Image (cartoon, rainbow, N blue to C red; front, side, top):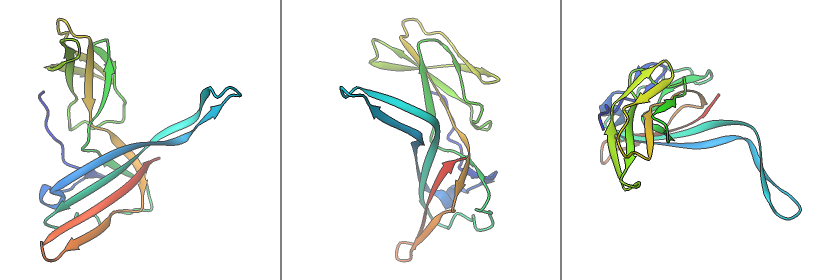
Length: 174
């Protein structure tokens, strides 16, 4: 699996590795959706819209340096956690909102799902074409989202005894 872990970016600002240090990102669905129940209890999904919420948590040697960002406006977040799409076809359509500085990478599911095998991927526009692997039952392509989000900005903290700066950022896709 050939991939390069991208740096976190906010509005194009690259957060230095020593500022970010250890980073974790989480995605969660948000939206106008609910489960309705019929008289016999059968569930029916009612959906109007779906977006992503994301939470970033980091700790490093210095604060992240984001004080000049205008948090009253939407910001563009270059994510560090990849998302994936699985298909039985080696041709997979990717979301347009993804990082251009971090190439997608791909895996083939082989040996009745017990193994993953890296496979080359080429991207033209929003279509990823993976090399066909003999005996593959499915293909996975991974990409790094580029999300336009609303957030209040990071909550920062500092451990003076350990000299470690940390922060958390919660954001929702616009």
